[in-house]
Length: 379
Image: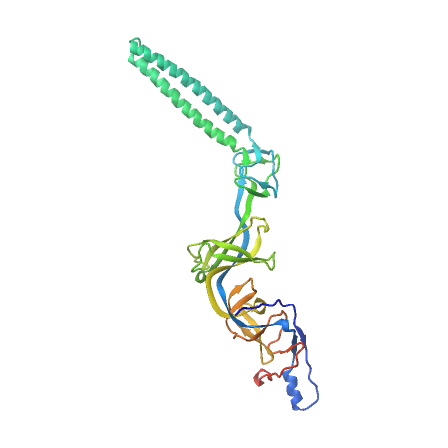
């Protein structure tokens, strides 16, 4: 059966129906029967119907950018050349600022000079070795002198390798004076200002990539069975009432937290058009793919008192508080499963308002219906 959910616009109108003070026993009985009455519009009511909904596991949490990095200073110095601020879009590798560190730059220049000197020394040692080889072959140089020329050449080679290694390290340090974006995204925070003296490890910028948002939530261990990456997720965001967004399960933790009995689940939501910002609270329904036949009612009909959900069912012309067991919720259609507590065809009140248990219910525009008297033990 197809559920046709009607948007509820009415609100409960409660009116006291007073009985006449004088009269016989029948009037006194009627006064006891009609202590209060609720007048409803037809749109305030819904009928419980049998339908099948996809089973789902509910997860809640805050949507945060999937990628977020705090860019920190890797060398000490003074922040200069600040080029970006909060909210600016950046490219991967884009220069964000520079750190003025004269000592580090000087070390890099000195290391390069050391490489040049070692190269010249090696070239000289190579020529000397070649001359020594010719003299040795001609018998004009002893074996010891020739070996000394060879050792000098090998030492010059080693000095050049050491100088190059030192230059590489100094160059890396010098490159760290240029602060670049690790990936494409936006500047979420700027932690330092132009001209500020900074130390190694001090935060400079926070870069986020909000093209994908992630919700980190937890589900009970008994609901985690069957959850796997790739399952579709329907998400609703408090800031966008009435909209249902489509995401998917990215990861499921392999073990439960022994302290809470909860399993971590991570849901990703595409946000390529930047319609959402990080930090929004969201509720997601992980669709397991299984469908379950049960009674369904509008979501607005289910109320909660502490942890026990209930509905106001209309029975014998009266509002009866009926505890129910609820299951999956279809956010698109605005209905929820009632696994126990209601039968198909029963009427429930879907409009908001304060209701007294046992109150008479009257439908606007219809003649009053016969109602059952309040049982003797409930008076």
